[in-house]
Amino acid sequence: MAVDNPLTIHELIYRVGIFIPLYTWDRDNTRFYRFTPKNLLSCIRVNRAWYAALVPLLWTVYSDVEMERRKVPIETIVAHSQHIRFFEYDKSESLGPLLPTNLRELRLNSVSSFESCADFILANSQLTALDWTLRLEHQSDPLQCLAIQTLLESLYQLKHLRLGNWRVYDPIQFKGLLNKTPGIKELALVQMEGLGGLEGCPPMLNITRLYLQCLWSNVNSGLVDLLRLCPNLESLTFFNFNDCPMATITRNLRECCPQLTTIDTMATYLDTHDPVPWLESDLLMLLEATQHLVHCRVPMESFTARICDAIITHAGSLETIHLFIEQDSDATFRNANRILSSCSNLRAFTMSSGTSGWSAKHASDILGQPWNLSLLETFELNGFKQRAFEYEDAFYNTFDDCGKKDEYEEQADHGKGMEMESTTPLDKEKKECLEKEQDFEAMTPIINKAMYLRGNEGNAALLSSRHMHTDYGKYPYQDPELMATLTGQGWNRHRIYSHRWLGHVSSCHANILRRKLFSRVVATPSIRKVALNDVVYSRGK
Image 1: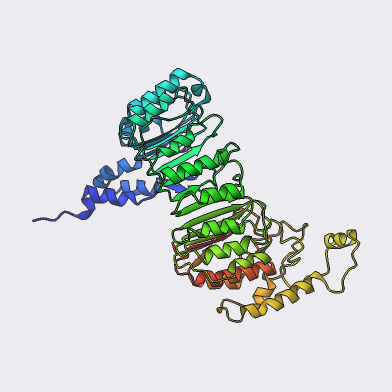
Image 2 (image 1 turned 30 degrees about the horizontal axis):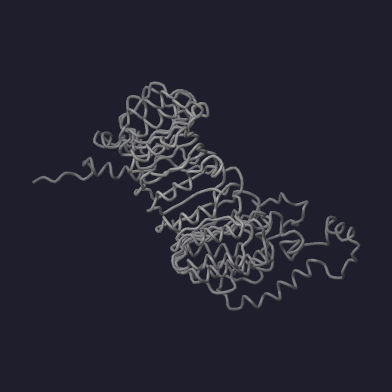
């Protein structure tokens, strides 16, 4: 019996094609993904069998922005529209002649023609995911809002629904939607208005994820009732608006959502500002609303001992922590160390500052007690000073070829009426670093004291306010000895996205922190990523 060549079997070819990247992430552009079909097109040209198997993959995902950038003729897209499964349209104009009928996911953003949107939905009743942001003029028309409800109720396979700019003119509308689409697992409501009480509405047993980017008490009093309708809720994302009724929210979560494991209040309204921090009392209520917290992303005014204690009560279950801290204090890094030494199941730890005022000198407190983190994969600290540790840490990033104080330093001392001390800031820094030298005696061979004390290699520029545009291309790695050792252990250093960290990764205290940090990190078996501000180190793929 003849055996078919595996390279001619349609199913195998298609399976291989799935792993060929069609959209790739472009870090240099505001769009996260770019349509890059070059490799898949090369495979399509192999022979007829490969052509027949892989052409459908080429058209599986449609993005109007990328099709326009690639100048793909509309006639070509229409001819292959039966293969489109994911459709994204971000323009305000009408959708034109294109009307695919085999979609699984549909994303419509502020399309001017309501009729075109309706045609798309009616032609794809098998949709499993819908992301529809209405134009504001559609929101003001009660008849169109009623028509939207009718359209959504026709999607009998819908599992993921995101609605933006929808106004509810009658609570019966939303109740009807919930009744007719019981299979929804993920529900996102963005800038919704008019959601009143939901008394009498049956429980939504399938909803496991809620994303609420809406005002609460003033215009959507029914949002708190929605929480009571989701007994199987696992993940809740919402926003800290001024009218947020935290006491009612947390009570409903405790009473009706026993399976809640993810709390995320980090995102911001329209993603335009830093997250609004919670008061300590509100945050404590939120952290106590569940008994089994696994993923926690919360902003706070200050990282107090009480908040730290509340987080540690979930030490046995926590896997992801992201803390945004508006006001820095001496206890910030000590409390962070308590979490890292207590949460043994932690896989990702991120801590960010709203003021970008952290000092590397005080950040070493995060290494105070040994970490209990055999599963940790990601470690990030974002918020170190934007200037080169100002005047408190280091004026220079090398102990050689640094002359006297610059004019800014002398003016600062003169203006304060202070007498110039016999020792320069450079002498103070050298003495302080030499005092710390004993801390490194037991460290691994990656420690090279001379390189550690010097900072940058060669004659680095003074790190004062008049030298903020240092040519860092000349010093690609502020600590070449450390980087060479990390490279030998499989680590890579990613490019820097901004200048926030450039000025001070090479100061004395920054070198102390970085070397101590990596001596701790290298001993963590699962670690794959370390980020200090915008400098990212990664290991493995």
